[in-house]
Length: 114
Length: 112
Image 1: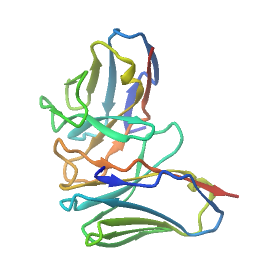
Image 2: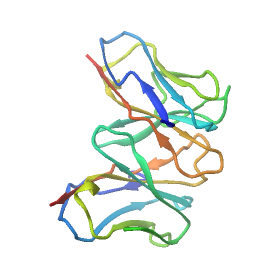
Image 3: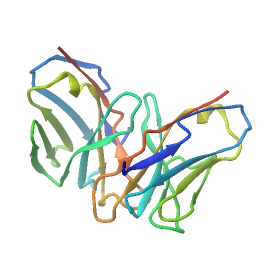
């Protein structure tokens, strides 16, 4: 069993819809949680990060962490065609340093239909 | 523009050939990383360097070597390329105390 599970999609929704992207994990030591967005043929870019459990909001994006369920989510409100990309969850037990680096999900391919 | 620069962007190698992937960052970041990204496998850490002069193995280090030449540059070497090393390689860097990694745009390597 992989440490981080993420549905690869594709997930296709109409413009303006609320999008929910999720990851589950098995390592209870994970405390730092991140979401990266990756456009086609580009490198991932950091979108959101949270520490431990709780919610964090940034514009149209909300990240949620439920450590008791080992489940994290990214919500996108008022989705736009420019949000079409692959979304990668990532997590680590420390703040990102160390040889462990980050453990990534495989990514969910999101398509926003105009 | 500030960021992580990777060269080359594309490369085709024959089995057994060697090559070095170059990575440089101009953000004064301390840590640097090499990842490979394969369909259905996600991003996997190959090697990492916490600071100039130090390197550590990641999840999939076999067949690779690295050099942290100075604070800016971190290179990845394939001594004898194999078809299993066909992948997209990403270099990343991180400022100590910060969460996020800054990634380069990748090197697409095909080994035939």
